[in-house]
Image (tube, rainbow, N blue to C red):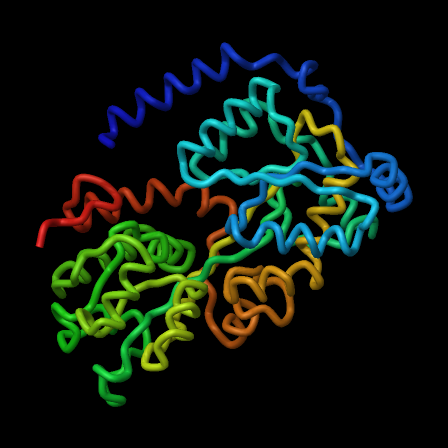
Length: 364
């Protein structure tokens, strides 16, 4: 989609939301309201509610397992679930939330519409930070975003991946410089949606990152879109190395092919993911608080980690992301970085690589 068309769609969507928005009062929320409850109030209220409706950020196949674990801990709460998958689905969900027609208590905030969630006032004004500080909720403070109303429940991390069958030990990649090494020229791939590279900005800054991206292009990579596709190229022998892949995707590939190996680079790009919030029109606020606390806890993180190793929070001891970060120099993409991630990827794709858009795949 062109920049002009994206702007037109964004403006049209904004006008549609403004027309549909029922107002703060209709969503049961005023500008002054900020909810802070004691542990006793949370438990008492959840027992009275007895139900919860969620739309979490996790894979569709994982949600029933997570729900089952939550219901085992809180058998007095019956959970119904749904999921938004892809930008169009998140856009429709935001419209429903803004119009006051959603029946959700919990929803996942997509980074593409981050500012709109707050402009449209669909996030419940809950003082997660205050309740955590006072011990009423067991949530690591670092998981709570700057607004205090959204909790980041997972992590995406980026690594280099190579095929040990095709790369001799003395040529094995050790860090980002491998992406510029003439040895790998024309034999490695780069994702044309460069999330992983964008997460290096906190450590490198935009200009150094763009310079690095230009040098990657000079080393003649095979351009490809999607982590799974890049890993398939690696296992098939079409390439010998990939410059920037998600850890959780790489873990799946490593289980299928023992020749695949990952390298934690310096700096190690780490990004907050799986953000969840309580809907402004939620009817089961107390149960919603327990849901987010559960997913932020060691118990909940163990469940999500068992489903997709590498995708749980790096802030929780024992997760793969937590283990990998120890001894590594982190490039942590937090609130500000996530908010500008799309812009950074656009600059890399268009300015450094000369593509018309992010995700573009040149014809071979």
